[in-house]
Image (cartoon, rainbow, N blue to C red; front, side, top):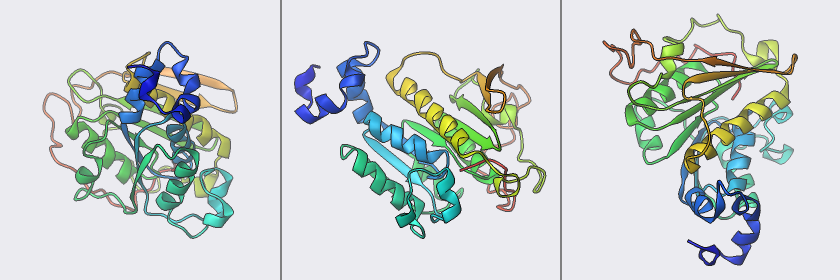
Length: 273
């Protein structure tokens, strides 16, 4: 491959990527052919979708059934005042196309369930989870594991965020190796109850994209066996090693979860979407 495979506009647009020896023309071609699905067009999805578009990811899917509210704009920077009342996935699509018309954007303005999720995630190279509730989070993690699709998961509350990557396959810890079951409803407060520093979701959503681009390009180290925790107050990043749990209900020696589960939608987490 050489620069003649690009249009003049693409050469200029992606010039800073092409200059990187780890990316170059070949790597940028990979990104243009890649398919990435974002679960949620909220706090985490906003920076993630903008940077996926800027990077030239060829196909971007967005799943979100919610509508833009004024209180979202403190952190959900992909939307504007003019978007209040619009479906978030459709609003995000407009912003993406304004940044990069190279991107094909697929919108899923529906809530994920065990019945529709397989059809939605099929064919994507990587899934990013920026959902705000445990039923969706576990549903996405389980489905990605069954469908053998890499998952980059992040969550934020108050001044803290966490990030991990799940690669399906033996010897790779799954989401349930760390969190076997959703917590009981009400155990973890929501951001509506305790608040959230808007810029923290910017940090974590951006880190999701960095992880995703490395996966697509096949470069660098990933977080498949580690959990990253960001503490904005103390300005501290902590990395904790993760290992496979032989007793894991999903990927352990004797798994008892063999199909997708629709948990009670009232089980809302304190994480930010």
